[in-house]
Image (cartoon, rainbow, N blue to C red; front, side, top):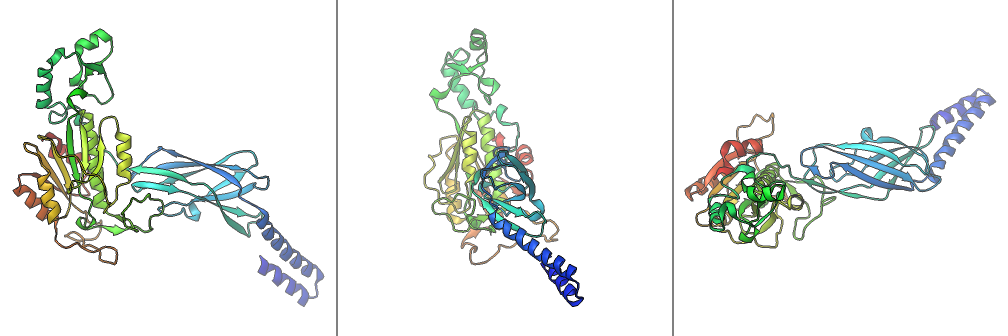
Length: 427
């Protein structure tokens, strides 16, 4: 526009046409004036965010509604807004047009797809102030960020509530007999997730509502889930595109977080197993092969448990130790490649008389590669193959030789279907 104004001035001067010179000069002055006016426009706004759902699920979508309330009299007019995301700022084509009116809140809606697991810092909001002729804009940043937690996907399997291998198995039923069996007077009201086999019908008839046997005095039965968190064991590991932006780093984690699609599958598998065990009324200890505590789950703490898993990263330095395995406590491990030391510790984590199932995961090949073998580990300054790491097939053979039941799979298999078809919860 400025170039056009200058050309009109030159043409008018060459043709000795004062009207053209006046028109061109007016155009130049007008464009300069409206551009300078942007310097006096501000983005003094209060930004609030709401997410639906309030916690995201890895791999799924979420809707963010941003409310923008002008706080200054000069903050008005049409603007375009975009969010700053830890997984990439929204592009110009995804920005939303908003009309700011003093004293009235305006809203913009963004949809975030294929959410990565983690605890993300959403914001700040980028505001494009455009002058009325559309020839200039000024980009400013509105203060305010929000935290959005994306938890691993938990697949509803529907086996835990009636599983005879979990919760009230034969050992717990023997305890019922010793404590009075059906006449056990220690009861409480029914809670969501309690197996129907624990309903105390005599107490239910007396109270007029469902009552179940109170078993906390015997100690909550538990299961153990083991997940490998060492990055060297996952052959598809790679660095994230950005450093720790938007992710709450734990003490001892690498400066650049590492990600692995197969590891994400394993986290979803572990979360699903723990929640299913909780449906059976049992607690779950989630640990590493070396015995470090990752998280605890019981039927009343699913939200906190999933929040802990949202923070889990490869090569995390986990401080606490998991409790020693109890006799007959079932063990389910989900691993890929393992170092010899971790493999020996995993074998030793099985208590006497306990069932042990190992799900050994091979990273799935990208679609359309035409390859017939698993992809090679990327080698760069941040990621190097660890010495002495056994491949998934070697890990599977070693665990079979140690008496474990082994299920070999790849990360493209549906978690729920694998649990149902392989009978992981039946042992």
